[in-house]
Image (cartoon, rainbow, N blue to C red; front, side):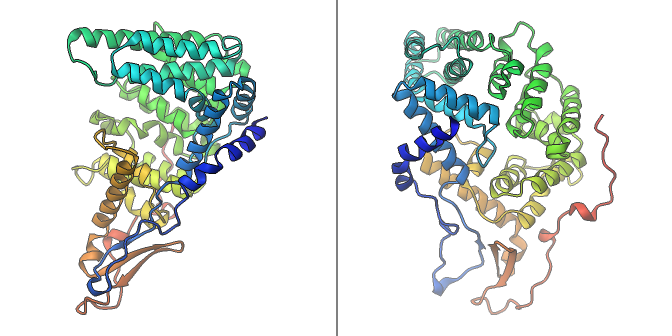
Length: 445
């Protein structure tokens, strides 16, 4: 049935392909005027990454089925995608995207009510969505869709008030958020993710763990079930790390311990990568004390293993943006932060072949970005800035750094006659290859 949903999506979204065509591999790379050729970083920039385009198509499928009140087809498509652990090119679960698309109209309207500080209207809109569904309380995947909508609106209430900043408005928004979380929890708690073989339901239970009376006691067990159900999804491990920081439901010691345990459980899928994924978002959460607890060498080993298993451009951009932007900042050369951030060099040299601006934009979100196009421009600018900084030594010598499918090439610039044509090695191109290191495998326990 999920294949029929995919086929339907191709028909429904044929118009979308003309509105948002995939960029050619060299789109967005400016051509220097012949009379003023200057050293540059020459790398293809996609206007939209393949993963973002795929996510958009799947959300449109879900939204179309909801608009047609075809809840049976939606439920069957969700179930099959969930049981198959179907994911996009970048690893996002298809079931989550279908559910988000199905509830998107209601969520958009409810968020409008949120901006007006009108909790009654926001709840009424989602109650209308519930009334439109058939068997929303008996069907696990329709309940999942409705709970996703309540979770999205709850997160909208976390944002700044649009109509006032008084304590009364703060209390109102806090209560409204809690109500949506409670409704979502009530919808999903009646279904056992193990019995349903559902990673989607397990992920929602983890996202709603704070509703439990003792979340710190449940967080590890709930995430263990989720990761065992879907070990190939990095999002689950990243969410575990975010929930184990001290400001949530854990401690730095507990986070490192769970990162090691998780790495051991998913080693057949990610090698040491599980350790890196659990620490991934925690290290750039603003709570810098985590660098005193992470084992940097094991983290870097995990990055090597991730790219050995997923050497695609989505992953290369994700890890390059993380090391080159999310972790950028002052740190002593021997500090764990600097050790991890230095991986930018070998990731760029070995793996990066094109820029996906949306990934770079998310690596350091800018809430003031006006629109999608602005976010894309900001992401592309940040990526090029990081690359120029990394290759500054070569650019200062008048060389152009050109990214090709075969790798990174350095070319002398013709209009700078004083630059010798012979290419010299540069410290910026050195990196710690895994097969050139003789360090022992770190202990996971």
